[in-house]
Length: 76
Image (cartoon, rainbow, N blue to C red; front, side, top):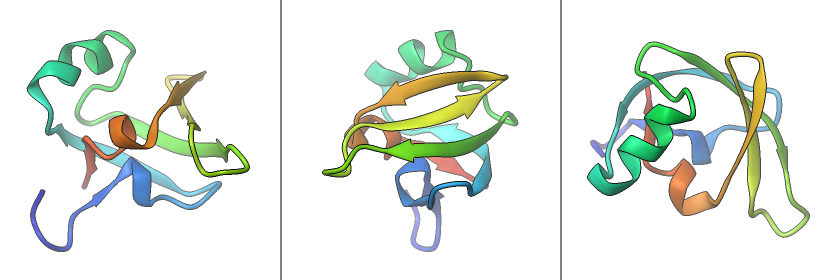
């Protein structure tokens, strides 16, 4: 990830972003199958009390991710 780029991990609750790309080749297929497609808007819905996992809203459904998974979703 380049300096100045943000990932889903960096979002605050209620904040939205548009997916730019996915950085982890192994995780990418799983995320693509779950609707995390470049150009799609995501919104951070909640964070667990200790910060992990987080839930995001993608295409009108809620997806739960670990922080390391969320960090692989780069935003525009």
